[in-house]
Image (cartoon, rainbow, N blue to C red; front, top):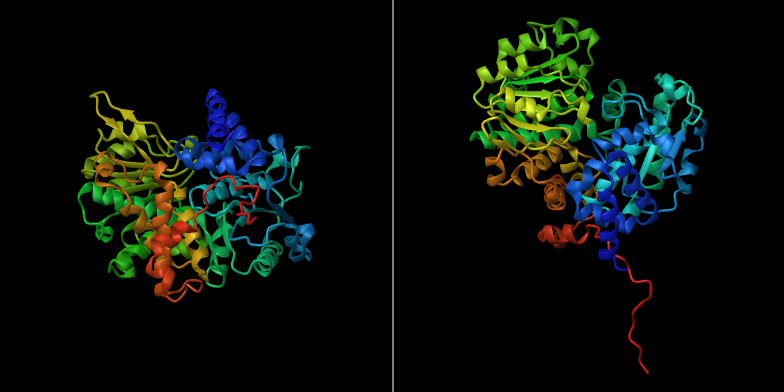
Length: 517
């Protein structure tokens, strides 16, 4: 059978299964048996496969990771490996690793501490790097830093695959991360290290430590921020407003963890790029956590990044009271608290804003702050909606149908990774994130905007990643970071980038050569 026939046969069996988690097991079994066919299916059917190999199904897959464990994929490093990590990296058989996705399992999606079971996240992310971003599978490496777990259920589980000990904290923890970073950078000096699903108390600290030294970024902070920025720019286009009017908006952000603050940071940098001062940009944000509106009077209890957005007045004000007083135009949810956005909250927003922009970004689906149906119903169809997890089209009682789009980081990180690794960048800069968001926002057609969509169809993800990668490379070249590329490649960048994107096809096993008799 050829590749197309194998793809058809697999899909027939796959589509007969109704359980998402069973589908996930099926596609990952194929991943273990035949990587070429696996990635071919992902590319050809991305809209169908993305929710299975990544959010929302990957959350359940991580919860069941130990139970469903079949064969090793990736590398695990733990405290017992201290002093040996540099040597351990040579156990990995591939010499040319371009991208590492690493997690410590401490904050998996909205599910909390899943320890070593969090390996499902790096595996899923890197599947998208390969299929959506065109990075060859032998050039990616999923990693878990097994620092223990504080999940009581896992500690008592005899089948748990990780270290059944309490989590490391403090100096010991950061020393473990430091040795890991030194080890992988020694073996693969140009590798991109993506931090994924680290707890909020450590994520920003690690990002601040490494972002200006090595090629690294945090997708929960920077990737979510860039993707959200692209969605907001698209929503402004849908409203008929200029995309440079970010500084005229009022943002109410529910959630002051690493994701919420990361989104605010990227949005603020975008406003500064558009000509606003830092002070003017800060004044547009109202960030609420479980204690209410961030309070400048309690800055000693806040991280330095949170303190930037703390308010001098109304500290501690509730979400609904903040909505009533400050009348935001944009509402973002990054709390992992399902149904946090109540009917009263959404209806209040609709009273004071002709076309409210509502993005409940938490996942998996049951952690979303509200559903698409609720948002459209409570605003009488006026809102512009995008969510972290996918929702089906919504038809209101009057017959109008709306098509919600997914604000998913997969629109940004594969292209970003492809761009920085192709050009040999030394760091991921804020401007790279901005141009990536711009490229994504510009890929949304006028027809899609008119139908209420602020992100492109997932089926076009390869084209999106190509555009994002080209934008990132151009920015790297502008700042002297495109060390691997010369004038020839830069003059025809689109063709060059396209030629470097992995295309899963079977390579001939028998060399074809002409015979001279």
